[in-house]
Image (tube, rainbow, N blue to C red):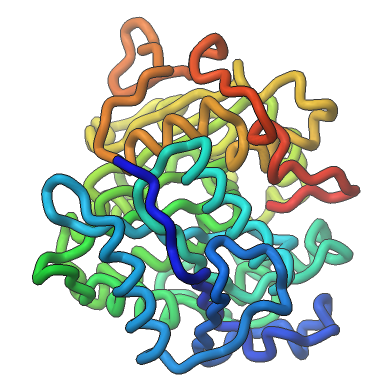
Length: 366
């Protein structure tokens, strides 16, 4: 697909006070009503360029830009990006805009990326277990405000509203191809949101792709009796990108152990979807993509966690899937089913992409 030019950047949040300066306060960083933000520059990383608009205006401009993403089958193509923890409102705008820009070029994605921003805290408290969660995962959710995971629980209704509204869009009287990309703790938002959508009666296969980057949830999530059935039911294909070199997920594995499944504690973003023995076959819509060979030589091991949004091999792979074309850099693991690794010798584009979006600071974004 030809990469189109867009008129605007699109950002949706359910932070009760999006622009608060108290980014580490559980009084201010809580779920609230949905707000819709536009900038008149595509994939704009300048925070002050964004302003709130009513949903009707947001939708009208979005439909105009989606018209330029129509593929050979006549469908427009839209991706919703969900960030991880340690992202303020400002951080989330910059991160999603940078990622959307990279998917477009050099990635070659012919659709549009917008963001769903849930109320995560700043970096000062995001690595503290006391801010992480109050319980292990429960469905229906128990606590809906306070810790990081409680705020995600409290964002499920907003997420349902956003996805249902987007699924209702038609361009040229045809439904859009909707996909979701989630990073780290954003995969818990995806997990809970999909359970909510399933409960709300959203039809199976309504969403084309779920792409799970560095997922900070149990690696057994797609096994029978676990909580991944909402994702696999609603999404036609689920692509799991993981790396054994991810220091942030090892940190989470250790410090946040009490809030994850103690039997299947290792993270999906560390060992992939097929590492644990499974009593029954995992649905064939789930694909594991081991990125361990390309998430190396990044300067510091803490750069691995966020690198999926910028490494040429991962960006090319995601863009190919979103464009409904065959990925060129995968090699199948012998004897595996739907289990691949990325070849570091393929899709080695030069330029700024290998470094764009990699953050060097004390706590990497989850």
